[in-house]
Length: 106
Image 1 (tube, rainbow, N blue to C red):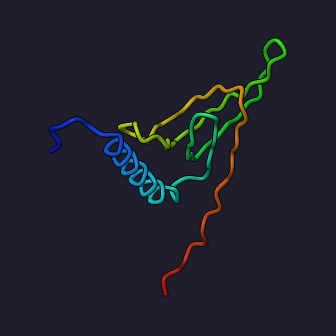
Image 2 (image 1 turned 180 degrees about the vertical axis):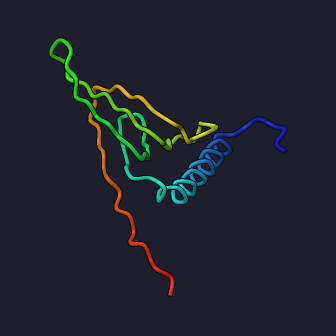
């Protein structure tokens, strides 16, 4: 237990531990998903992705719907979400993950 004031080093160590835990969780769950989706604010894993390009008054934006998703965010209590709806004016990157070949036991 830490009773004194929290130092900058303590906060940095705490956030580093959270990031490492998040990376380990990502490594454990990535094989469960089909897509990686990156927006300017978040990184997602998802099993279904729909991207719609929209225009409004000459502005172009993207509307994304993700199903069965996992969110890269160290501050979320639960990173697994049933569906996500994102609207962004920034670039969106969607990549389909390659699935490893199924090995048949000998």
